[in-house]
Image 1: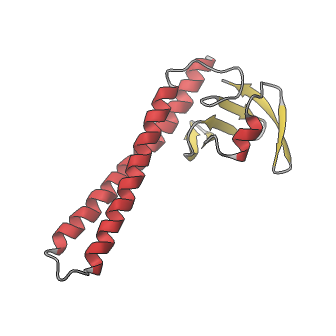
Image 2: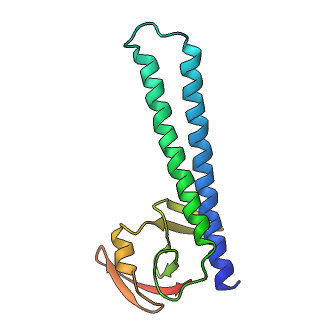
Length: 150
């Protein structure tokens, strides 16, 4: 598998995870709205149950919006070529972990490998930035060596 194919596979797996998160948030948002609608007319101005449902709906709406924004960002990364140095959009394989430097999406699987999608604000990203294959860095007192960057 070429570096470009590997990179595409990693990014597509992260997109699938974000789509799953977006689907769940949309379902929960719709459910909260439906529960509020099914509750009936307002009993009084300070109806706590309806307020709770609306807050829940709004929370899931924000999660849904964030997931869609993450998907758009990841789709933009698909258009970029593979990288030789660590920068935003690169896939990094170290002797301990695998990273996709993109959005803060957390842990996801690519086949049987564990990957972490991390944002530019994380200490690991800052430690990795500008490095090349074979370079080493220390994070949390642990030395890691970059095996590949693509």
